[in-house]
Length: 268
Image (tube, rainbow, N blue to C red; front, side, top):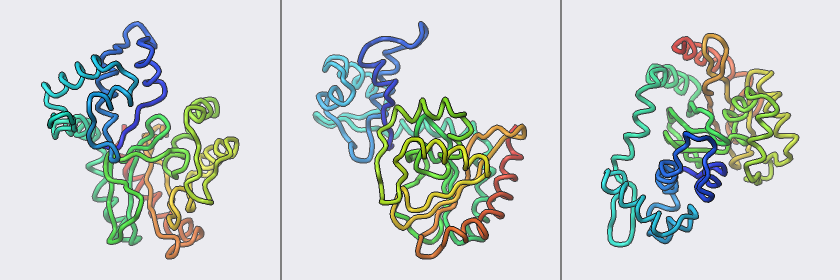
């Protein structure tokens, strides 16, 4: 589980204030503790959990003990780790999204036709979250298993979905992230990022060329409801040494649009 605590969530937890009267700060703290576990933080002590989330040791202790009692974390000495039961939270979401299961055979055919991996992801805050992954017979360095997150502003799937939010909301989300250069090609100018999201939405596809990882090119198209609302995006990734930008557009785009349209038929 490679998750992160949002700035809004961290602020509410640290201050103990609620965005509205029905917001439960205690529940937010418990969920934030679960989200604080990730690939480079597989276990935490009470002190570490308190420091990461800016909680008191007493609060961190109560939360971790409660989560352990409920079966979502497990304790081994001073260390706490996630327990298998936490998977129920993610599987519950996937089970309610029936289009994902129906999209899988279509994406398998697409990956076989193009010889490259395909993914579907939804926008969450300033990240995209992978909900379906169909690997090709090649290993890509960027990890994109189901549930993994990547920065939306630097991914093709993210830019399409950000573009649909409108300029004011794009800027609001952009101001909450620390933009960094992942490669020499990464767009770090804020105005350029906003413009790119809007242009990609207007043209109906997005190409990210070695911006998130050197040697990786990606192309994405939107997945929409029948009324045109974007709910996810479909992506195909390829090694830059095998596939040019022009080939992504000329050879990949047509089949991807047909699959995205077929998936969109599953959405109301």
